[in-house]
Length: 413
Image (cartoon, rainbow, N blue to C red; front, side, top):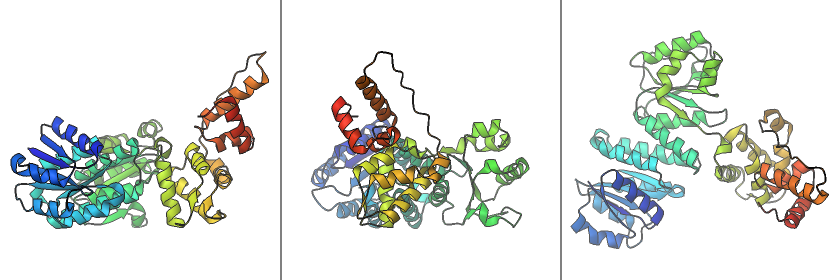
């Protein structure tokens, strides 16, 4: 098939072109709508992908015009901050939309959708799923490779009908993910149930076209897990999305997880990364949570350093709680590092802390005091991942002193 990509952003345009070419497609990429109009008669694409910020014309009119070709599939593309435009594009004729940043996993999903029977879904169903995907991008914020891979795995898993196992630490948004899986699936117009909704009834639903979410499966008794497996294996049941808050292998070794249940779920496993492995997603989430509490507030740069340096044993849930309390206690319109560090070092944080012990700095007899001080500050700065407020906290020094010492010893991290 022939694919035309119209996108002014060279990174995403070239990523699409490379991936589609590798899949055997004939691909041409242009940066504006005027070039696309000139190329259409000669190239005759089967697929057109239009970025909604393409210059040289009105992208919405262009995709509406292209959607009138019965033998042509039209897709829109938008930045993750402007996904409402992608939904509007579907109302103008686009079959679906992608969002930037474009990843290999998302391109694979596009190819998979194109290879399937597009006619099996009604237009209303396509719009419903597109709205869920837009809500997913808005609710499950993050652009780190680990998080983007997890989201792509979620979309892939949602397309099937098998039960799904979510693995990840507490606070990694398992229920939110389960709701997205439900919405993206063919059962999305049905009922979403949590196990808590059934507590006291003594029975799992016997039939239905919805999704049942069961958190913390490893805390249930083995007989309960055996009954759950029998329920999953019977036809006509709700689709099961189960979650565990520890490594399945460790839960198996500790006798907390029924082996046959895990065997039945293994192929449908989606791992949710902890927040400490998601890099700058901490910033994105922190700003989002702060805006939800008080849009007039912002973070001091050193406050962001402190948030990045924390290892977040409670994950996204803990970050949301810290930002909520910081917004309530902030004096003025800036959340400062002193407040953030006090919240991160509070009793609640200490009870949950899983931080690694700081490394030992070995000092040879005869080393100068200046050299000892320089090495100690350097190692502490590395342990704090470059956070100067955290370095000051660990060394029991003022932030001003740390800045002066870093400058004096040339230790910019």
